[in-house]
Image (cartoon, rainbow, N blue to C red):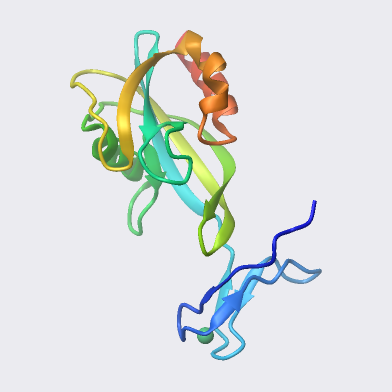
Length: 180
Ligand SMILES: [Zn+2]
């Protein structure tokens, strides 16, 4: 497989077109501006999500935006500066489904990648929490075209519709949690 030519995008500080430099023996992958010397490492981005369980169902979304438009996703998204991981997960759940939950337990942490047009792929660190539904009817909003309760027993058959590569592992861990 041949790698696509590296994309350029404006330096965050001075606007000159810059491109990623691959990792070498002494330095990880990074972006160095030849004009102003601004140095941007290709940091992984943290994201957080919530798995809400109601009986034998889990609350999932259909993505309303690219990337992965129409694919099955978990309420969640990128953390913002100043947020706790759990705070970000709860905010995304509220924004995308309109519901709130009580106590949450950490479920796990999963690596993945995200492809941002004009920038390219970067690693993501995805934290998930799990909790039981208590009240409220979820309604898809924000990045979610719809929100639906999906039986855990149906998840494996929907694998081709998953938005992200880490979801099979995530759902295995979820089923383990539900079984107690
Ligand atoms: Zn620059």
